[in-house]
Image 1 (cartoon, rainbow, N blue to C red):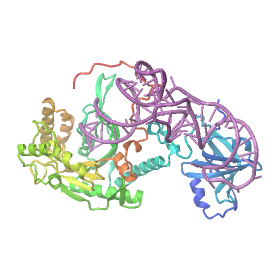
Image 2: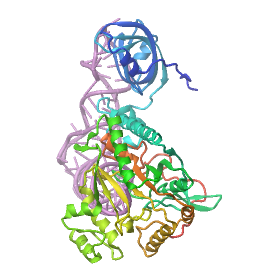
Image 3: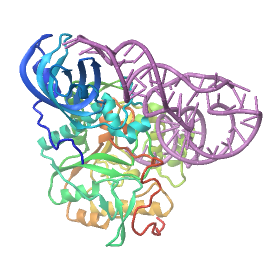
Image 4: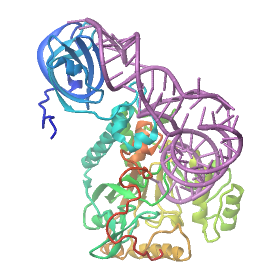
Length: 488
RNA sequence: GCGCCUCUAGCUCAAUGGCAGAGCAACGGACUCUUAAUCCGCAGGUUCUGGGUUCGAAUCCCAGGGGGCGCACCA
């Protein structure tokens, strides 16, 4: 049975003491008693005096112990780095000027039985940092900062959206028909119903069902799952903000993105003039708006458009080393040319507008440009931060788009992953008002705000290969085991 | 999935074909104002794993595993 207490009465956090007694002079005592708690980060026993740094989630404060005034002094001076301690004593500032708790009573709250890293250099091995985030968090201040930033980012987004009348909702993670994005889903199985279900790749189609139901402004912070490769910018599960606003179009979404992102920068970083990876980034609105074909033309010096004949587009693709498939129409060719030649060159912020209809099965036709849809992607710090469009509201048109995707899939186009969602079509038949929708990758947004290069640094427990030699390594989960899967 | 790089003490790193080392942490000791305290002492190894070459391998070669970066897929 453990001999550590069940609770501890803390009266103050380290940071609030630091603030409150900032003016206390060196060598002065306050006569005020305080109780603090946290983890011992450094300990400097020096004979009959010991100076230790206690860190809690707010900051750090020194514990000043002495054999003359501290209970169980010898034991205290032998504590290990990493031990959790509850400490009570008088708030003083030492002769050398460090605000301290002059330790009277203390209690061990948890023993750190495993060794700590180098107290100066910390833990830098990325493998340890990601697998044992608890180690990373106590050892590395930047890591603590990033997760605090993530929390504040999500919190501010909620506040901003709620202020604008958006309602937060939750929609199914387990879906019968995975939809709303071009991505391969994870498959799982429901035992009682004896059927496969998919982990959602996007909440989009359910959120729009809610708009059909009369919820005019909805949003969800949705964990989504995509069965794709891992990289510095991709984790198989990630968090997406999706929102839908009735009576709005994609122009309204551009304004919303500008305001949302720039105010987050202002509130969380104090300025809209950031740097990312050492390169300046000015987020103050308005952001440039340019059509996709216009941007491609800027970068390759050749005029292209959705009306450009397919053979000509294929030739341009070939000129730039863009591999193409014979089944592609002008829209897919145009998108591929953009992605391979132009996208990586953009730094932004810029709204890349008016995508080909062929590659946008859920977006509404452009009001004046046949073959295009009213869709944009905000490019910020050289990467796609999100995706938005005026929503396709017509049920018959949506059915045709779904069927075209399904046909391409049947024809062997592995990139067309969308299937016909009959229930969604039925919902549209009840009437979806004009609406615009927006998706923003929260992980990437936090990377942007925190000047972080790797998505694993903004996800507390990123997906990793199994570690060898630990429970779970090679073990099979219980149940029916590997059932036969029909080809998909 | 493919390519390149990488893996040495608890942590951070040396040792480039010839006795596996240092700093920090741990452990023992000294020290009544420290700030990565200082000083003395002591201990610490499947050099990721398995093969191979060699008189001799942390080092060279092959295979496997983890990680990083890039590509592909994608947001």
